[in-house]
Amino acid sequence: MKKERFAFVCQEAEAGNDAFVKHESSLEEGLVRSCSKDQVVVHTAEGKDRRWAYSECEELSRSKEEWPWR
Image (cartoon, rainbow, N blue to C red; front, side, top):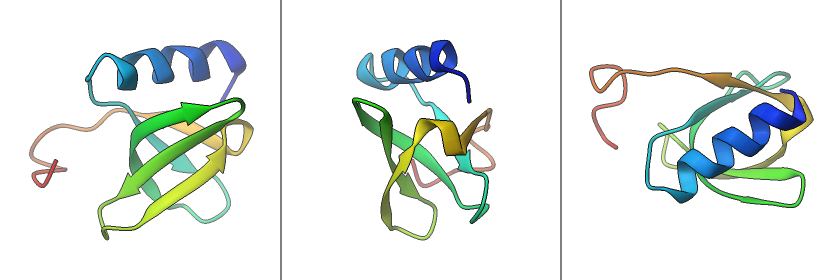
């Protein structure tokens, strides 16, 4: 993900809106909970919390039907 998209994703998460990312190497996906410096903190559908470098992620779009637990 590019730096400007990272900033947008972080702003969305901070505003209480849903923002989703996928980690490129592990293929895990998660709901962005917060951001710090160059990392995103996500909560996965499996209930795990992860911290990833934004440069290793891609932004996703998900509907409520795909993520009913949020």
